[in-house]
Length: 374
Ligand SMILES: Cc1ncc(COP(=O)(O)O)c(C=O)c1O
Image 1 (cartoon, rainbow, N blue to C red):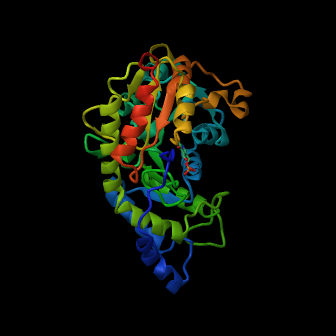
Image 2: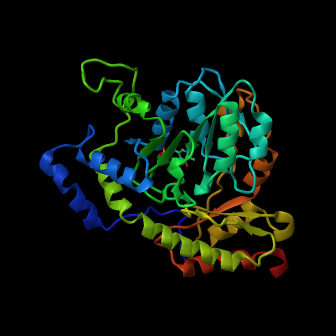
Image 3: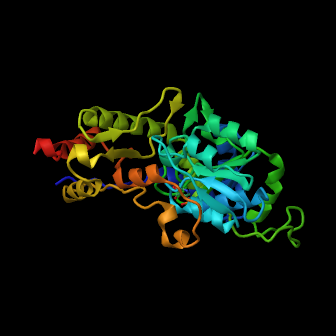
């Protein structure tokens, strides 16, 4: 039986990494904004076109520090999508803000109509993911934010490498976070990146990343900061991996195209409709299964694939607004479409060490199990 993991990290050659970390052993600089972190930061600036960019120990912490740096009013309402990894919602709440859960549309992202419906005088920001690396409706969101004077923070954890009309996704909104977690398109084992418009935030972010200690006087602190520093070993993984990221995305696109070709004629299976003008990063391959047409539920097809050696993920099988830790606060939440999508969505494996034969194997299992094909 074939064995295809749900995910697998994009790893460089072993020797490439060991060569990159050699100098760490020579200099003894393991952390504290060393040369590897500085090099990764400048490579990221170059790639994204963002001058105001810093790296952090992980994406969640970067998001929390980023939101905090904007000094949004405590208790202010934040429009967000519940169809996300719980980190997005946790970060909003941890920063003393109130999530207002908006609905999503066929892009899996926050819907414009829902933003318009939920924006009130208490709204201070839109903090929402580019889920699966698929961009939000950035132009419309900017227009709404401008008219209501709202900050926009994109949780771009999954979106590294995505571009809209040739512009890096990092350059939309007031701030974008990328996660460099192990299974992202581009990883530094663990890691996070913040890209932001207002260069005056730099001092606060960099000091808060280092316990709040003042840049010029490490005996004094300006903020009650935390330890959000990336170390030199992780930065080295980032340096090596960034040189491969375009190749990785290209390979993922080949796999995605193959999935689309193999799945397009299966009634009840819907693949994402990629738009012209967007360069996607193919971080995930979500499909939606309409049980009335396909004849089986998402969970049934997940089990069938599992039994044939194929791992898949139910992202996001539970909306964050329905998680116990969040639900108990009774935040505003009208998310009918998101609930439907969360019952129908299955993420098929996609990573560069897979082959198109793997994709065909997976698609064949799905096709064979459609009710009218039995
Ligand atoms: C949408 C989303 N937000 C936030 C995070 C948190 O990032 P990290 O794992 O780097 O802390 C992740 C991923 O892990 C994510 O997928």
